Length: 258
Ligand code: PGA
Image (cartoon, rainbow, N blue to C red; front, side, top):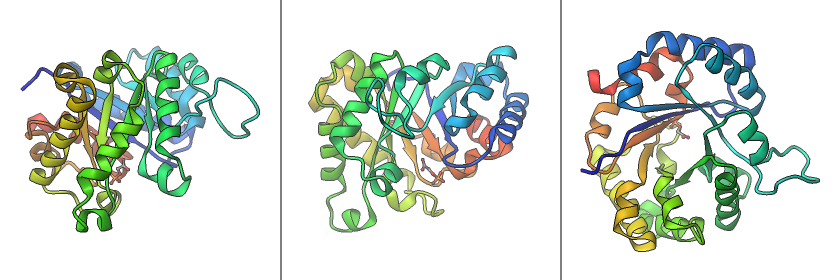
């Protein structure tokens, strides 16, 4: 297996105000040690209103947790009420930005071409996109899960150079497993993450496909993380519900100790 450093990411969605966020990150940092950080990268993706507070805690206490965002706008600036640009995120020392999460696609109607523009805007400001892909239950039952993911990758990665694609993170998240408690079996998750890598190989070549980190997401918990991480093509996890509490997120990041 290629030497890809795992990435465990906590997507807080619309949870934790900035006071709760500070407490959560401090408590998480007490539970993690140097070994954990050397074994895997760990990122937290709080709501926008928490970013500055968390940045201050991480930098003043030298905590090597990576700061992430959940969303961004593709334009540099302008009359886009309510939106936040990638330049603004870069200034907060944000390193990773989630794009194309299924909730953004389904609730806010984001298209593959918008997601592609966001990924490019993230690179322009020296951050790394975590591009989410995944199928609905109907698509899985209809046998078109792989086709759906291929289209999301073909269109989402359009015009992005090989080196950049290689530095990206792709999160495979079957929509039916998000927040439902239903996790894909490790074998199904592996099959789809291998498919993601194969799509990247077709788009950007073998060397790029070996570099890209593929996360699994969808009801990841302390009890199922170790088996998921033992699969060849799974290089990390994008965690929602179980990332909201410091103890469970720390146990997920320490999956190798199980
Ligand atoms: P979940 O969410 O872990 O609560 O299923 C995952 C996600 O939406 O990224």
